[in-house]
Image (tube, rainbow, N blue to C red; front, side):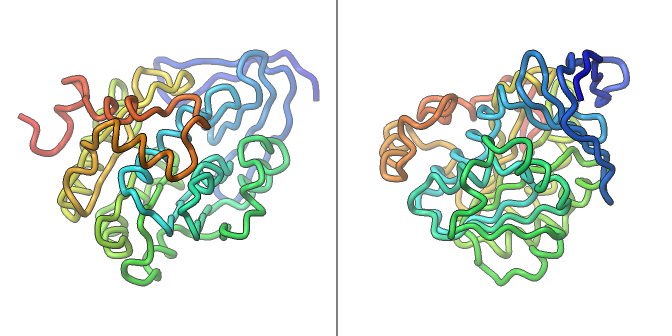
Length: 290
């Protein structure tokens, strides 16, 4: 349906952004949330969940690359990866770009997100949906992690909405405890922790929770234009210290071995190394900060 109306994001009550809609592609109320997909004049196709911008074709590469390549290259030998959320398929696609990954399990609670993404955001997931290494499950990520065997995965990537509504249970002590259990030795988990200029408590609280079960808890940043408010932070927790401080030369070697060198538009070895050097207003939110 062709239209020239505006869609206003409703994440913050007193500040936000809006998009001029060229064409509405879908508007569905699933069992979990309100889903809108539209074609914008400026950012390509856009997905909105419960009034909050989730992804745009124009800048999805920034978020997806940093959410995926950073933990996999920090680990260095990830063969089995668990993805929770990420129903648009972008994380799955980037995970499977790593030639060493033999198994990628994606658990998305809302099947309508997967269906609509495959229909309207085909370029984001690409051919990942049909890759024989991929297992896509429409189900509860909490339940999956609780049932998963010990040390079943090397890396866990949590791409969820903010800790409200359907995404709230992915920020609890119990969830992180089970994640630590199902990660192998040297395992890594990353999850989005919001924009700290506007959502400081999200990073503070989730970092404190992860610190109860992981010996190394850090965060790194990515500049995603449509996540308004400055840097987006990505929480990084590992079962071994030092994985956040690898030099660019090591990361470059690992990226070449993984087969992703030269395939990225945002990630570089230098970007990964530098992303953990946080401005004081973000660093002070992490456990152990003065």
